[in-house]
Length: 267
Image (cartoon, rainbow, N blue to C red; front, side, top):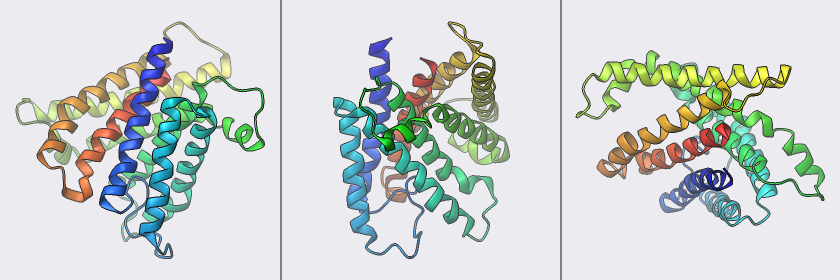
């Protein structure tokens, strides 16, 4: 079990590290981190991109090599959560049509990455000497699974709201595009709901089994997302590695990080 946890941390750290490197390559923030062109008052955006990306890459290396990994993970989670609240939410509300569900994809993705960093922090042993900031941030560790679960529910709903578009993402060699799009949406939605309900049940009533619905749902979501990584995201990234500043490439590593988060929840 311990070796598996290391692997899931690796999935998350590699995914986040790749996003940081992609930002350095394209010399701009990826939308999953900061909305394009927002905020307007952020001058010297390129400099901030380099500073943030280098620090993010360094944080991922600290997680991988276990260099103050718990504290670094908590700080990373806190910064990503602040980015969601300070930049992503106002950024989406400032656009002409802010209430279309699809425009909230990146805020929910970043919320999930924040939750993943909280969960990674929780997978490390707590030290004896904990700073005030670390003590404050570690209170949010249990919220990490809910950040992930809520995103899965929203993304599952998107599969039905934007079914015509989602069917175009299914590889041509797989028959029954509508069926697979709907099945994927149901899997995400039901898996997210199961984690939320089972997590609340454990928190409120202390009901815990060796393989609760909470852990099973997370494990199945991890498997589903990893399969999509292989079948969907990698081929799309190979076919189109440059559009949208390498958005398809970033999607590969988002999926890797998300699968790692799901498997961490399942532990």
